[in-house]
Image (spheres, rainbow, N blue to C red):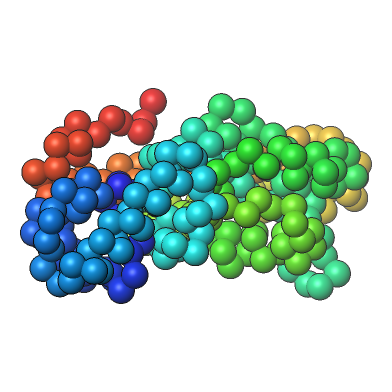
Length: 266
């Protein structure tokens, strides 16, 4: 989908992009092949041709950072298919949200393995920075309001400087509203019943129980809770991105590449 995105161009917004699509200019290649495009002077067309070629070069070099300022945040989902194998799904747990509170757990999923770092056990900032350094696309749920600001305030420079996709905003685009658990229920994704029974699966209370008792049982439940967060997050993003792509392909059915979009689901 990223190669059908024209909002990377100066003075091309949502409406301008749709006009290009409506006129059969559905990909960067289509744009480059046209000698003249309505709304673009000869000079501006040559300028935008150069910009598209530069953007394509950065994309095929897997330079995701290039798109941070170039692509509006709400459109970060269009990078997902291209950078899916290098995406990291991240979720943090904290002891609260006051100024003196801190991160108790950082969990992330690379699509194959989960990794959990726990305060006082294995939460090492250098190791965390290294583990996330290979990331090309960072994905959270409501992370733009909570996870990222919290981490950047407590541990500046630890999170990678890459495009961020907030799945909560993505879900809203297809009518899936509410918190992560609500979206999970709507999509039929199940969590451990044991975790849900312990204080309704509240991670803050599970952490307090662990700290108060020293019982690793509660810590294990919290780890399981966090792992469910990041694993389900990937499933949700796969589903929603597929839905958005199919909606686009249905409207612009003449795009050959979108007639045979490979499934994102296993």
